Length: 91
Image (cartoon, rainbow, N blue to C red; front, side, top):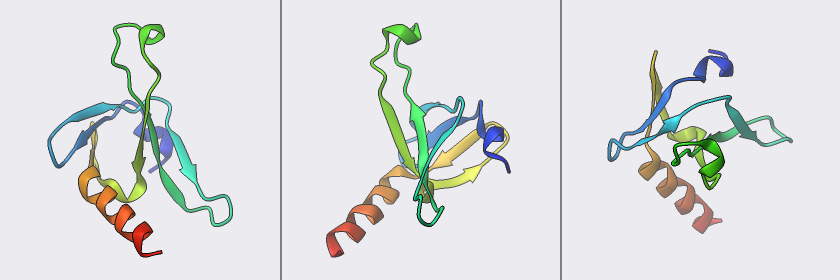
């Protein structure tokens, strides 16, 4: 799958069923040394018009993505953040 194919898909959190937003033009974070993808940046649009929004961005860790379907991307943010923070506390 190409990253451009993710555009237009709705992101749903597996833990609580919350709709997190729709992927527009996808932006990825990655480690420049290794090339490993860190996550997907998902802009939150809470206002009716984009210019009225506060411009918040949700970072979805790549490990949180469970399934990519035709219309939705299923993520598990609760477990992903638990794994990230437990790994950081051990280091």
